[in-house]
Image (cartoon, rainbow, N blue to C red):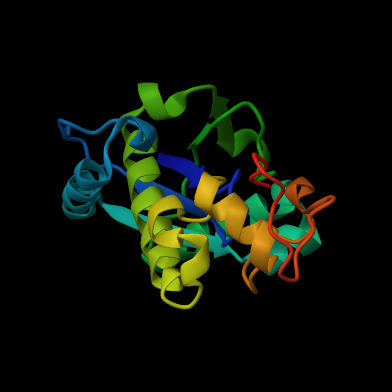
Length: 198
């Protein structure tokens, strides 16, 4: 059995990331959905999960793929890349617990979708922490190249400084240009109107 979760679906920049995790028989305390943990707590939990799990695969779909494929297909690509990593380690699951209500992996009977599985399944919660910490680290690395957008803090998600930077500078090279936030966006040095952040 494998637990799978994704992160980055709602971001405006950077990849979408999917983690697939094979749990051992023993329980691991303190693991919760990554959204319920602080940054420091997530990093501690993710490190513990990496030492506990039998195997972990992490797949990404780039910002270009998010634009070109759409989110469902980008999630499928990232998820299947994570499963390929597991297969390379010798694990090909016959049962997958997938957070949510839609099987974006399109793998048929092997997949069981569970709404809020990141709150009810240890393997999915553990996968959510690994996916979040991995993607956040990637986006904080990008902050050095695109300092105006405050990726260090928002890791590509909507936030006031991020929105203001988009209005002033336009999208960076790693923004998802087909996303709806781009509609009506004016830039090239034109500051946002007073009280308007995007």
